[in-house]
Amino acid sequence: MSRDLRMGLFQYESPLTLIYQNNLLVLIYSARENHDFTDFAFVCGGTLFQVHKVVVCSQSKVFHTACTGPFEESITNEIDLSQFSVNQVKWLVDFLYTGAYLIPKDSNLDDHIHMFTIGVVYEIEPLAQYAAWQFHCGLSKLLMLEEVLPLISLVYNSAPEHRQELREEVVKFLRSPGSRIKADMETRGWYDDMAAECPEFIKDFLFSYLEGSDRDWSFSSN
Image (cartoon, rainbow, N blue to C red; front, side, top):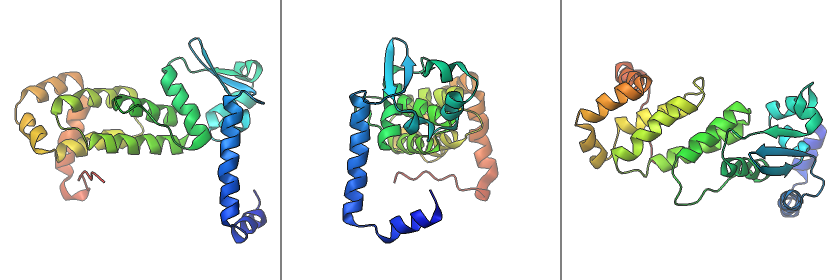
């Protein structure tokens, strides 16, 4: 988009413009739901998610390269995402078309960890940031240490190592836990278990204290 066009859109923006933009999003999403003009697909096991190249490739460098380079995906017009669950691929599609995804209230935080991974692996930065924020919000509501520990292992074993956001979230959370979690942490059992299962977390947790005032390790529930 040229600078002149951007300035023109800004200058003449009105409530009607916003309504049109919102309606356009609804129309595009409806087109996907009805398989109108779809020209690409995400494959997850036996499930096929029909999508539009212009929507997915404009938001992901990985998808763009797969569709335009000398790869099988550019011929089959399909990309295999079977390493993720059907729900997770559905949420990916929802995010690409709406900028958000909604998971069931009874689900756990594992899903946000996997969505963060998808965002990082496929270079969809807004998705990675959105999933990290959802993980942060959900983490702040946990009341028992036994709810947190499995998440730590998943964060360290599945989220790409070069992205530290989720690792920092669990470290910050356990540095300033609620009263019940704090009481659970006073026993040594959890420490021994995590040292055996996820030594990288223990190293990060201890190192956070060595950094002291050089870095803000407080956890905000907002």
